[in-house]
Image (cartoon, rainbow, N blue to C red; front, side, top):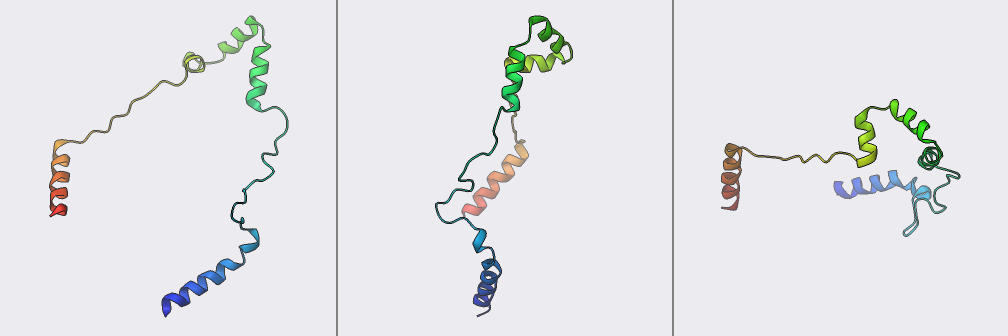
Length: 101
């Protein structure tokens, strides 16, 4: 009986939210993005595209060389290996056998 009373109480607490909840199949933003105009990325591309070679070189002088390389080639790939020492591996195998029994 206590369980059903708790469920009813919980339902009552959430009823006040009903007017603001999305209806089934309703989008969270039906009118879409409200931003109008040029994005910062588009602006930067346009400005950089309109620079002369001298202006581009001047721009690059203010950046570190690694930053320039990342702009040209992308971020360096870093493989992260997760290893397990033998002692831990043996323990996990024994635990697994014990759980299977």
